[in-house]
Every structure is written in C-alpha cells, then in structure tokens.
Image (cartoon, rainbow, N blue to C red):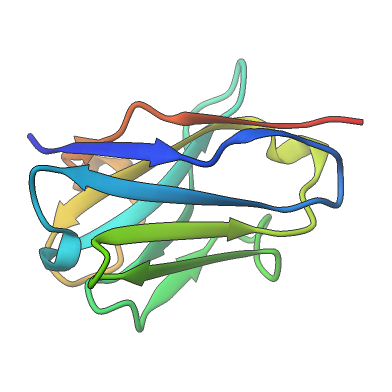
Length: 124
C-alpha cells in the first residue's frame, strides 16, 4: 500500500476558493489514476472527482461540476483539486486516492492507496 499526502485545506468563507494538493510518498504518480473523495460529519464518504493517468480524462460529481477542477502535473509528481465558489455544504475532510492503471474510476473500492485527508471548512 502506497502513501499519499493531501494539503491545502483550511477555513474559507462561502464563495471563496481553495486548491488541494495530493503528493505521493516514495513513488511516482504517473502510473496511477487519482480520485478525490470527501466525507462530511455524519455522512458516508463520497466521490468528488477523478483524473486518469494522463490527465486528459476527468469526471466530477454533479454537486461540484462547474466549480471544481482536477488536474495533474506528472513532472511535479502531484495532483490538484481546484475548488472555486465553495459552499457550506462542501465542508468535509477531503482525501485523495490512487489506483494503478489509466482509467478514471468512481468506486472507492477500486482504490487501494489513500491519504489521511485534509479538512476543508466553508463557513461565514
């Protein structure tokens, strides 16, 4: 199992933006598709977005479409989640996860390497 580290979370007001980063510990990301998931208090973990190995294919949950963008820089060995126009309902712990292979996958069970999460709080 490989380790991932998320960063970039914080406390922001509604309408503001955050950019999350996901970096591997001890391996390179270019062989992996990366998913972003979130878990709000009292709720199940849900998929937010995924980006395939090349970065050319992405997918987003309906609740974040048009506001969130996932991209990757394989040269910098990092994947990002740009979150714009944040809403209070986006408050959650955000996790990145890796799955070996090229496809953008949506099911948590398809991912075998996870980070410990970064807290995003949207509040006025």
